[in-house]
Length: 79
Image (tube, rainbow, N blue to C red):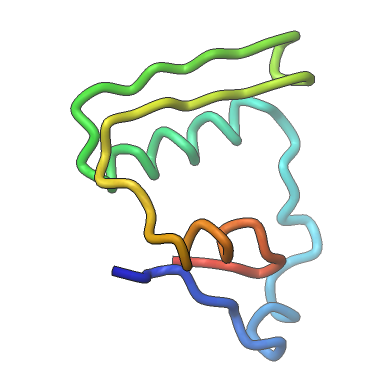
């Protein structure tokens, strides 16, 4: 089931410009919450170079539809 969609410009423009990732720990927290939301019973986190080079969160959750996988990296995509 597709659950990711793009926010309308009118909504995206209301989001604070300061809503940027300041720390790798924020990225890890969000990715782990996504894994839990997907029903994961196991979550592995692999961090390279304190998160500056790579952050991997590997889980056994339900996964994403092909459409969601494409939309996930679009600007102003949300679920």
